[in-house]
Length: 246
Ligand SMILES: C[S@@+](CC[C@H](N)C(=O)[O-])C[C@H]1O[C@@H](n2cnc3c(N)ncnc32)[C@H](O)[C@@H]1O
Image (cartoon, rainbow, N blue to C red; front, side, top):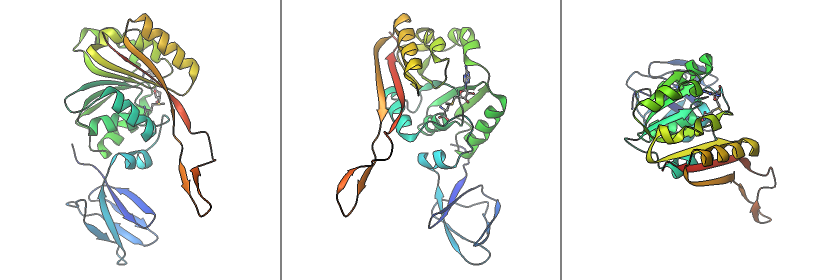
């Protein structure tokens, strides 16, 4: 991985800072040394100590600059678990958005090519990949993936295809040409309509092992009165369509 930013943490305060950066807080000015490392302690000019932590996946979700709605860690976990994306894999991803999924994939060692149609979002995503320390593994390309399919289908196939866009079904129709045999497709959609279209496109493309999961997670609460799932919210984030290239 390339140089990443660090978290400077004290109680409930967390600041994402680069080595060499100076940052004013209500507890004094933090002057982050160029050679800072995780596990160090940095004091403000008023003598207040902050612990230095290396970034981990959930920190990316909390601190990267947000553009397109970022994928939540639980959905990232399902995508990674069901595609098995890991070191040495080539992953094709769209849309980049904030780049949360792309950054997780890069931190797992995958080489990621990710497309973002909005040029400003793509610029933010490139900066986010640098912050996450994966700029060498995650190539953010500005462009509409659906317009690049002919060129990509002629190139080296990918081990996994991860899609989080409304027009994902258009890409799914070509998944067989984009993936190695046995390569994995994961399509995330917040709505059932887009999910159905992705399933139909996967069938049309002749993909194997097509299955769809709704992702629901319930937070548990432990109080004096007893223990039960939180009554706040239903915990739905979306649907995941999974399939394999024949
Ligand atoms: C929901 S966000 C993706 C979030 C991303 N998975 C993450 O974890 O941060 C969807 C993004 O896809 C982009 N997009 C939509 N259609 C696209 C296409 N055909 N090609 C490339 N990017 C696209 C949008 O501009 C938006 O930024």
